[in-house]
Image 1 (cartoon, one colour):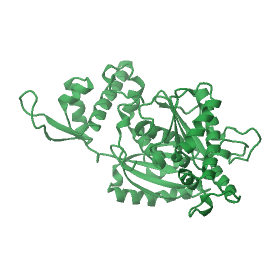
Image 2: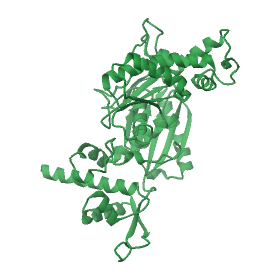
Image 3: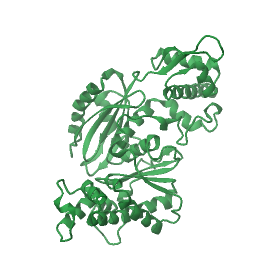
Image 4: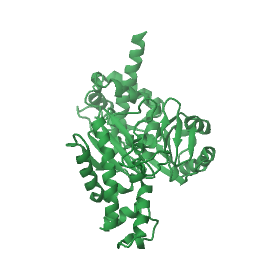
Length: 430
């Protein structure tokens, strides 16, 4: 009986290997597939025939010439229209719905303001967003295969329940069940930082990095932890809530979680906006006083890039606090990289110089750890939701992640993130 399970698992692994090679090739022949996958030609042919039957792969003609002087080989390509995936992001700022093709390329995004304190109304608002995104992407609803959801708040992985989202006004929301009932598709739900970490590790600044932390400073502060190429959830799925760790020596301000002195109270977007308003009320010269935009983190970041001393001082203080929080992560996890996301990260060295100096003072062994800005920007969470939706129905990919170290045909094909060249995925509106 065990042999049957092993054989089925091996077939899934081989199928995943072949499919990923085709997906990341413009056009490829069966012979080249066999060569690159280290599988036998009959095995490759059987897999290709199966993929062609379900429409995932199609033939597109012949190679111009044959290398052996014989008949030119038939070329194959991945059918990007064979499936579609849905990504949903519930954040404190708004709700976004993305439609991606079978390659994971996002074709359209529809979004609007968040609805706070009313999870059912948030669910009802998804339908018009979905219709708008499907129309823009020119994708029929029947093509959707699964849904990935990222949400601002910790998610219990065993149940898909968003336990609490103070900034959304949610408590114990059965998000996975609600989305599944709304769309009738397989659903996977993750905290937004976890989803963003997946995106950053596949197509962002941490591509190819085995162990890293994605740290976000926005409405709140959170992090996604990746260890040996895999997301670290913790016991229930709450890992990474660095924003609710105390970093101030005194009691500090009351946090949205109800406690005092959390990192979120001194280094989040709300903390930056509060510091800016206090500065504008003072007498020191600053361009923030004449800003034609809300006094938020984006305004302070823009002013800091222009060299405004007040804005740079605010971000210097934020960098000091973030550095202390990052030092905790370094001391406990020893990651290879920290990726910093959110408006403050776009200020460049105005944030990173004091941040790195703080890490040097507070971390035990900070040397060699790269601290870099995100390259995915505000779309990291929705990109991650799409990638997680794809993973949810592509079980073979997860199997490869688990056994690739011992499976000879996968050797040399698996990236450092533990997946078959997954970092080569392309997102249309990065």
